Amino acid sequence: MSVLSSEAVVLRTWPVHEADLIVSFFTRDYGRLRGVAKAALKSRKRFGGALEPMTLARAWFAERPRQELVRLDQLEIVRSPLSAPVDHTRMAVLSFYAEVLDEILPERDPQDAVFRLLVSVLEQTDAIDTVPGSSNARDLGHPQQGPWMALTYFSLWMTRLMGLLPDTGHCMVCGEALHGAEVSFSSYADGLFCGLHANGSASGLSADSWQLAQRMLRAPASTFAGEPWPRKRGQDLRRFTLQTLERHLERRLKTAEALARLGG
Ligand SMILES: [Zn+2]
Image (cartoon, rainbow, N blue to C red; front, side):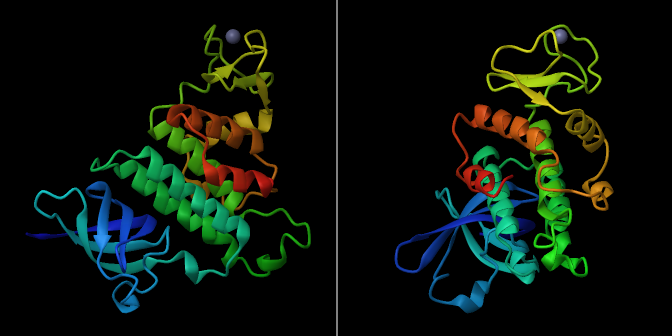
């Protein structure tokens, strides 16, 4: 039984038996896997804080004969969400990433582009904590960059990488080029619509959000790091991508409700 190793991000854990944990983790080289971390609840030493969801780590694990779950042997932390001060918004955003990935990624199917997206948005999600004086940004009413930009970028790109995002530059019905004014989306159909073809249940996508989507689909997340980002910015774009993801999953995402309560 050979031990395999890969970069990985922990998505979710749940207890099983006495002191074991089942771990859902997304590896760069093997895709999403589920494994057993033996005695993880008893011996904190072996895994340390590495089982915290959204920890980026180097993982060592082994296939077990005739078993669906791999044996998770070791995790070595590369980047921990616990290294930044606890912030409710950031934690809610991290939980959202975990739920989306856990639900949407097929098991044992490597998705390198998704892995790269995740690593880059994790960096941006934490970025607020490294800006001097930013811990009070919200209290002072300053535009809060931080997790909202990263969340918008992640949601948009996940719909794209999962093949759920049709051409955002043209109306789904008539194919006319959209220009950012009078663009709308529907909770019942993929894609965007022009003013003429918006149906009764349509919601509008603001010109800023439409342009943002065009730019985000062409540039890395770090490009947007310096931009002012009040919480409301891109809110309609996030709603559009969330509806697309939920329609595909055929269920509501629990963590999206927490984000909605935070105004996301
Ligand atoms: Zn149209």
